[in-house]
Amino acid sequence: MNSIIHNTSQKETWSVQLKRGVEQFVRFGWDQALSCLFPVVIFASLAITQIVPLPFLPRYDWLLIIFLLMQVWMVRSGLETRDELKVITLFHLIGLTLEVFKVHMGSWSYPEEGYFKIFGVPLYSGFMYASVASYLCQAWRRLKVELVNWPAFLAVVPLAAAIYLNFFTHHFWVDIRWWLSTLVLIVFWKSWVTYEIAGTRYRMPLTLSFVLIGFFIWVAENIATFFGAWEYPNQTDAWSLVHLGKVSSWLLLVIVSFLIVATLKQAKGKISANRKSVQNLPS
Image (cartoon, rainbow, N blue to C red; front, side):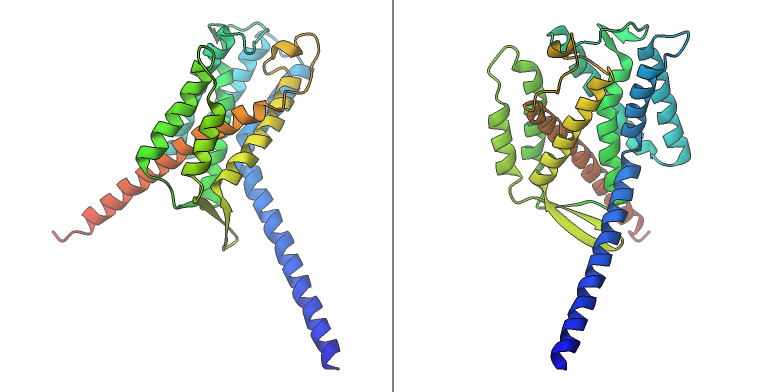
């Protein structure tokens, strides 16, 4: 009799845990979906403008207008804060600079016409990078992300700078991406990222989160090139899968993005803490 009661109780416990797990997964998915709103609009716009030609302006210019309107709406609706807009604008400039250089070096191209182009690069392309920053900022806020064992500022900033510069220098010098990847593992080996879902906190090794985000951006890159966002040399005649080796490039770019966002978040947190301490001082 006791065995039957025990088994029934155990089944109920498993049932409750399974239900709880499904609810948490759905909630996590919903928060992720909201955080990915800007990238979703980008991919939808790429697909629609590829299928349905818009009048008066070239496709690249329509994409720029759509993305600008989306950015304005997100800020005005409260989905994005003004501080997040500043970070996103910074990433737009960083990404546009990289795009101009890469197009000049023949890494990829934007073959379609457009009025709003700079050195062969349409201005909308910077939003590809800005959308990564948008996702990071919004996911950070919605999931209440916290960092555990975050390395020292003097280790993080030079590493981020070296990763970004390697995107340029490897065209003229040796490519040190694998050395940089090894440094990332060493520097962030003990670092964790914690996040909250419906009042419950979870944690994940920071390096694992880098890999996961980098992989999904590679998947997104395949979707983007399929809809003509840009074109690699091997895709000139017909679309083909982006080489899996590009995952390493996106992984490093995600690391740079994360390091910049994390550094800015921590700097803002320190400024807010200092203001509170000053306000609490006796007059």
